[in-house]
Each structure stands twice: as structure tokens, then as C-alpha cells.
Image (cartoon, rainbow, N blue to C red; front, side, top):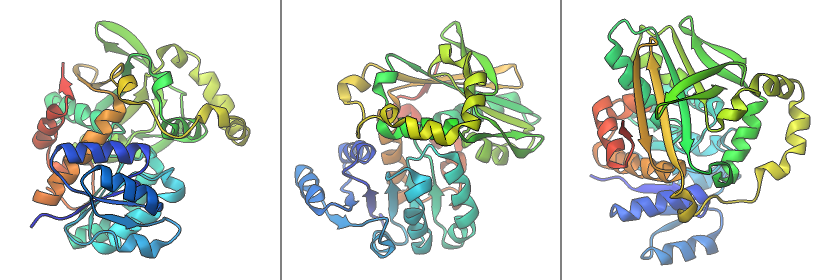
Length: 354
């Protein structure tokens, strides 16, 4: 029996991308959010889809969204502030759960709070199943697999092509701003450690050139060590703006001591709601490079980060609703679907190895 797919936050920017991708694939998701009028209009535009009014401030409305075998896709953030209610609702109901967060601290909390319950119910809760951080997990897993059973280290760098800065959504800008004032997680010495964001800079080979990237958090450090137990180190870097990387150690040091001031003064940086339209998204692409033990390199290229996020969440939701997970619990992409199905699914969406 195929479970229902519920898109919570369907009228938002990311929710809209997920909806469009689901409809293209023949799915008829339930549209959930707090604005009934907006939901009604959106449902009418897509063939009179079912709607459900739900709000994070009223947990009872969230608990009614999904049941066992259903899939709840959460796209309402910032997740660490308002995302926990949807994750709790899915865990309580035994429903499969996906979200679009880029907040690693939120993912860590979801795993700590809900893993045992999800295992009991047979549900998969797979947070951060978008550009953050499926490409890095896939590239890292492929590189580690090729490096062999004794692989010790992974370094993963995210890059982009095209005019990215003007093509960032409000949610991404908010996550970037807040992330600058928070420590980044690394897997080092076979345990999670915190280091100052931007305190490390590394060059990666990208399209025949060397591009710099700075230390950030990524769910790769939470999940890949479980897939490859020999790993001593996993480190994630962001190279969206290579020129900025050289200044990041100084910038991050200032941000670490002036975080509240930075957040208070950075409202204009966050920008208006929404994100780039289809024309703007078509001008940028996503790249990720994974290096295992300084000798095995895997490079993936794909479409725009937001387009990819919408497609990834739609692909995962349909697969979970029809086939269920490979492994239940709060798990990463490799455990949820298996490495080969994940690789093949990403290739269908245009994220391919170069």
C-alpha cells in the first residue's frame, strides 16, 4: 500500500519546489500550512489537491498530518527554532520524515530525540535531504568505498558555478548568517569535535583549477562514520565564494566574539522572502568534491542547489511511500536507501560523477 505524501510548508519557496517536482512525477501530495486561503489557491492550481491546515504553534494540528507509512516533508524553518514540532509529530505517528534543513545542530538533536522511536515503528527520519547535504554524503561515500576498508579520512568541499550570491534564498542567507557565529562539527579521532567555523581553509581540484573552501558543518560528519567505521576524520568545507575563503579565519574569529551584534546588524543581508526563480536557477550549478585519504577523488556535478533540493525530496518521498526505507531510524541517505539506489536516484536528477 502506498502511503500519503504531505508537504508541510507547501506555500513557501522550498515547499513550492518540492510540490512541482512531486506533481511532475505523478504524485498527488497533501498540501499543509497555516494559511488556508493560500493552500486553497495552490491546491486549485495543481488539480484540486487535498489540503490540511497546520501550524507549528499548535502541535495538535501537526499530529494529524501523517500516520504510519505516510511521508511528512517539512520545509518550514529556521528548523532549530520552529522545526522540532514537525519532527516530533512524525516520530509520534511512526511516519517517515524528510526535511530541507541545512542546520546540522538540528539534525543532531533530531537523531538524539527520535532515533529509538523511529526504529521501533519502522519509520525512517532522514533530515537534511537536499543540497544540504546529500551531494557531499554521496561523493564521500563513493570516495570512501573506492579507498577501501581501511579508509581513514574524508575531506568534502561544496562549490557552485554561476552568479550564486544573487541567487540565494532568504532561508539560505539566514542559515549562513547564523552559522558564522556557531562552531562547526568535525569527526576527528573517531569522535565529534567543535571547531570555529572558517578556521580551516583547504584547496580542492575543481574543473582543472584549485579552489579554496573554508570549514563548515555538514551532516557528513554525523552519518558517514557509521557507514565507514574505519574513518578517523571527516571534514566539510564550503567553497561557494573561493575569494572569501582566504579571509575567513579572521572573519570567523570576529564573528565568534561578536555573534549577537552580527545577527542584529545583518537583517539586510538576509533579504526578502523567497528565492531565485527558474530563470535565475538555470544560471547556476552545484559541484562537490570528496577526497579520501588524500588519494581518491570523486567529483559530482548537478543542477542548481534549490532545484536539486526540490527534486531530491520528491524522489525520496515517493520511494519511502512505495518501498519503505532500507534501514529505519533517524538515518543518513546511505542507510535510508542504500548506496547504489542513492547514486542511481541522484543520477536521474542530474547529479552525476565527472
